[in-house]
Image (cartoon, rainbow, N blue to C red; front, side, top):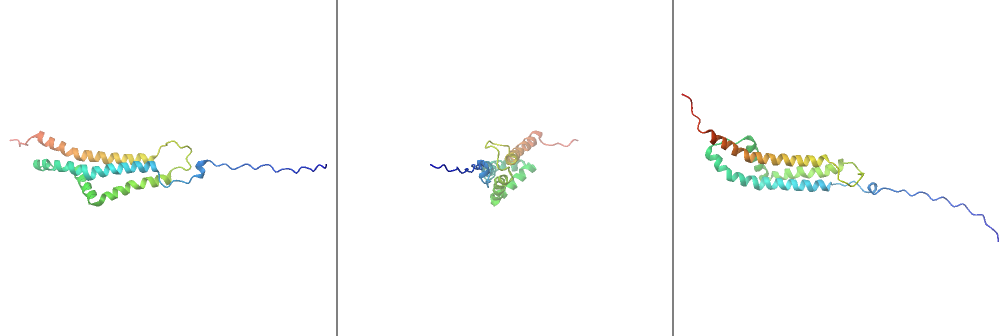
Amino acid sequence: MSSSPESPTPSPQPLEYHSPAELRRRPKVDWALAVTCIYSVAVLTGMLLFVVPYVWATQAGAMADYGVKLPAATTSLLAFTRFCQSGGIILVWIIFVIPPFVSALMGPWPRENRRRYFQPSRLIVTAVLAIFCIWIVVGLVLPHVTLLDALGSGPKHSGG
């Protein structure tokens, strides 16, 4: 038997490993923010199209009877509500649809971990919703305060 020289075997090449985050494509929509925006705009739509007109319809008679001048917050709220009722609510929806797309493009990618992380866009959407809600509450309550102030001060008498 003849022994044949063994040919050297090539050393195996290391495999290129990629983390799953590197293989995933950047999302086009931040779905968590999209849910927040949809919830926010649904609440605003309900308040602007149903709550404000209903509450104001019940208050308008009392305000007119006593001749109370409406505060600026109330007149601007009523004007914005009329704008929304005439189709302007679509503009509010568009404003709340934009952040999930912008946030998905602006966020870091790939993310280091799958845990929740701080997003300024969520903070901004929440702040906008809070500002709208505060404006609605102030706009609806301030006429009552003005009316109570007018009733409490009584008739004005001139000195003499």
